[in-house]
Length: 325
Image 1 (cartoon, rainbow, N blue to C red):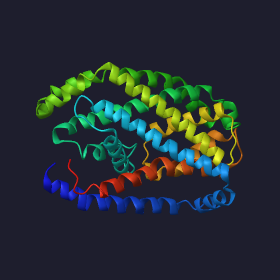
Image 2 (tube, one colour):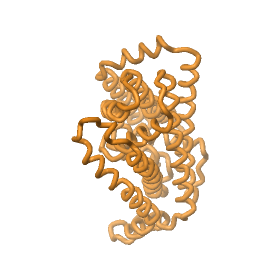
Image 3 (tube, rainbow, N blue to C red):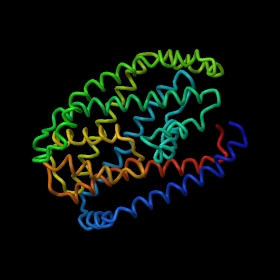
Image 4 (cartoon, rainbow, N blue to C red):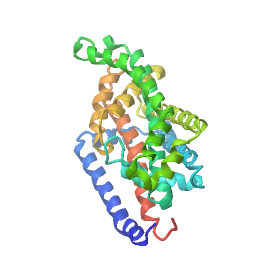
């Protein structure tokens, strides 16, 4: 990495990112007027069981990002020899950048910062492939969930949502199949880009992306499905922590639809908390009337899975000064 760019990143961009992240989280949390009440109630009701559940949620937060790091390491394996710890560090850095971009599209910036110059084009492509695999897992689970959900009970007398949900029930399986087709045929896309005249400079890198083995794609997709299962487990543990007892299969159905909706609606992670609340209240209405515990659980998942890792990534960038790239 160019020395001047490295100095800019380590001594200007990293501190600014950390300060901006802290300010943005403070602003978002401050705008949620009921959040202090939720945290106060959780604090007052905490016991050994609640504490254990929260510790498990925290543990699985690291597990699911470690799975993501393994995906990143697998994808880069033919390009650069990357240690698992460094891969995990890059993942956290990527979260710091992605948290303020629609549907986390800025994640590649944080990931490729500390890759060698010649590997950054592949790194960008591999970030896209890894995230695309995770989107496929979300769409597969979402398609199953939205077709298992009981629309009549969910929306009761409100028929406004019946037609949109009915259309989603039809479209979602085809969307999942289409994404699978695109995923396994991505080599054609990268091969086409490699032969564009204005991409000639990076032709070799794009060709490497186009010959990614199918076995690697299968492994990355499998890890994405495992990671999705960890998400579901985290939600169940968190709901247990806030004393919201739900039928596990029904909870999985509702969460799969929630995550599916969040993945197809353009949102920014830092300001999507309100949308998470609204969707969760709508989807869990037939399962519970305890809106306070529900929104508290959804909020804590957001803090554990997005804000905390983003903070770790920002700190990792701050402490990266002087290290070789």
